[in-house]
Length: 481
Image (tube, rainbow, N blue to C red; front, side, top):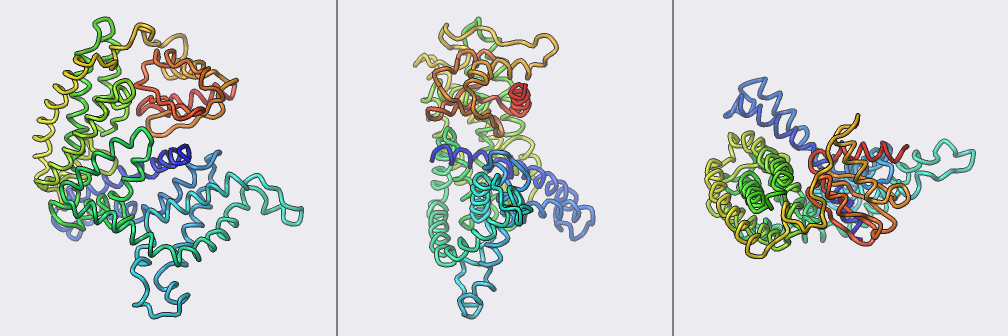
């Protein structure tokens, strides 16, 4: 079950990765026409329309993303099947269709069906289609029906299964929708405290990958909050819309880079250079793009007490920003790029105060991390025991550094004899192995990766960072040879 949920979390990153494009387009459009939102300038209308075309169809992006990401082969027909499933259920459960099915006036249809085109339904459609693809994409039908064998069979099966799912959801969806809305309203009703609780659980769930599921409730239209879309489209309340995004900026742009500096300053002298290369890259990624996993995984398992403190500080940051109604938003994550793009939007409220808050949090992060690392003798980067190799793997021969990293990591995982499958998400290699005892974690660490996460008896994650796809591609080349 945990592996399934982790794969789901990884799959959700595919549609999320599209959102920066919407943010950039909307940001450019609003910069051109900051008052009329395109009504007074055709160029602004062009960019804003292009950005909203992505935001308005987020549920479909999630259906397709999950449909691809949850399949073993990552093949195109799985995406088509997911789209078919989504179209079937959203058409059958549209208010007009429900009114006809239940033989009641349109105005008496449960309000839950007005929100049937949402991320939850997209994820459900993608998950069902992926399961059918994994199970039936290799089925061979009799000669008379051979044309519909294999991958062509999956969209047909998906449509049939979604008919049954739609019938069930006709009765179940109002209860699910009410529960999701109630949960979102409960947290929203707590105001700044609710934002703080969300921020804490957002971080604490990262090792499991389940923070993506939590984010969907607050960032997208699962429970009616839809914080990201409403902020970028200007459909919300000044100082309120964006509260589930704003507090991340002080942490990601300032807090975590300051934590990286503290880890560098406390590293052993002979390992400072090695620690610097890792922490500098992680700090820059966090500041510019809001990608924090290279830093977080550098201490998450080596010093879990620091990660718990980090989760608490994140919650406090979101609570403070929400309390003072300072807001900014992001399309991907809370880095400088998204901050600049969002700071001129109508619902951005005193975003410069997030910079002030960030500077304060930088000081807090630095001194708390430095104190705890020294006081508790925590094994953060550069402070590992001597059984971990001192030197990183360097580029050699004709291979670039990603090729060298891939060879070393794959060898340390046990090579062809032990590796069952290799996949990747935004920052991690996700590997299934036959025997975890064969894996040489110390050898993997010599490549300079930020961290390693063992998930169960047969699954291990190697946290590489934003360049993970380059390493994953090299690993797959090795597996083909």
